[in-house]
Image (cartoon, rainbow, N blue to C red; front, side):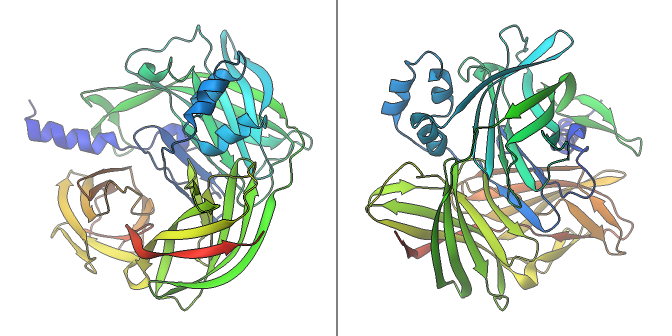
Length: 458
């Protein structure tokens, strides 16, 4: 019989496992999964030259518009569903939405794809569960991409990342059965004809965390959920002609906390805005994130984008930051504000964790190794990081090495934030030396006392 401490340790070890369903991404493509309140998953299928960052934000938008458009019989449900996303709300308000009304079948099961919003850099798919689809009170419904191909050439489409929402049973009626997927093409353009294959997965949530799974080493570990496949569905999507983006050339140099940056340009698409920024090689720190806002005529504000918030190259020479779109506005004056930054000292990018002695080297200000839970073949490490408010982020890349140079991947990862503290939990294979080397991916957000103001040329 296990005591309460043992049950808690089992729950921690099992609650942050990567779903095996996400292991089928092509091996040459980098994959990073970040879960936020079980609502969003990011699967990065960009080449090794780039990586994406995912943050889930709730952004207030016009309730008057949402109330007005909800009276329309066809588009009203979609407008209500995206009312917290200013970019998509403005796209729908300006009739930049494509009603495709597609249905795919797998045996007796069907999946609907009624709406699409797209431009040359972004593809937003609104899947919908049919009314007859049954979902239990402990089940989340998820949709994962198997592959995307050019609908004309049949070639595999590459150079994108996507985020996907999950649908809990208590939110199904409120969300009208919608599951949204957002694809961002950081390294190319979206074809105007695509074939996609997706899997509908049912995640069975075990509140007690007592579901038993067997890992490759034969060790039984608890898991908080398991997945069942409800069907595989194929869709052929013909997209309307894309509109041209609004491009603003800026090319301004600025200094942020001792780091030199160049704000190169801003590209505004109907589904979102892309701000491209490059960094000086001599900077003593990596810039891992920027918080931007756009002021229109001194008062209208466009903030960080829902879903994928940024993409950057692996050498940290440039970053594309994604914020909300004002494509359909006609402001007389626009200004770009840089409000906050994430800095990672180059000398503190890699840390060595001594699992036996519960220490990290070098010591990182504001970061502590709070707890180590050892098992026969693995260890769960719990880090505590000082943050601003409830800031949460993926602290490490999910692959790591031991001191002999052997490479591994996390078997579990999770974060939670409260009272200006973020806890990061990772599960690793217990190395013979008792030490592992982790690569830090992001750092806490630092708000600037005096935000940097950049004029956007008309």
